[in-house]
Length: 215
Ligand SMILES: N[C@@H](CCC(=O)N[C@@H](CS)C(=O)NCC(=O)O)C(=O)O
Image (cartoon, rainbow, N blue to C red; front, side, top):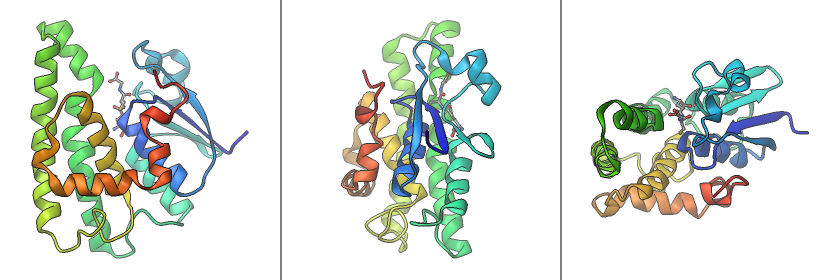
């Protein structure tokens, strides 16, 4: 049994972020799959750990910790090698700012529960939901592309030449975008960084296709 248990779902991009950080830092974890399709994220057992009824939830010796960005920052503070946040305040702010384009601007409005609400309450069909997803994914990707292309701190990855928190958010979102046919040809810098991420074994291993509950 590992010191960490991750309650998560193979296809969840927020889960991808955390799996990638655990892998990067060489931290073993037990994998508890919760099927979002079956609504298992909102089971009584999971709500006891995470009242939001969302994945991922990391269970550590200290307790249960929901919210992927908080998990990433806590892992970085408690297991600093290799770091996923820069050592200087400006660098950390920049990485958080890039991460939040994905985690705050894109992801929440395209979450499964939002898409289901559009369908159930407003009769939006599959094509309409995909168009909704692309609208907000493109808005965020455009901002990310513009910043990454023009800011001098960008290197092989979002911030310099080593992989960090913003890259984990970026590559997980790009994997998600593929499911909704977002045209990534408009975002060459994002795609260059995505490819660099996928070349890192710890990140490739965290991808949906490599998880035990992948269908
Ligand atoms: N802000 C949360 C969001 C978590 C989240 O929304 N996870 C999605 C999967 S990527 C989920 O559980 N969705 C289930 C639903 O929408 O019902 C985080 O970063 O951990």
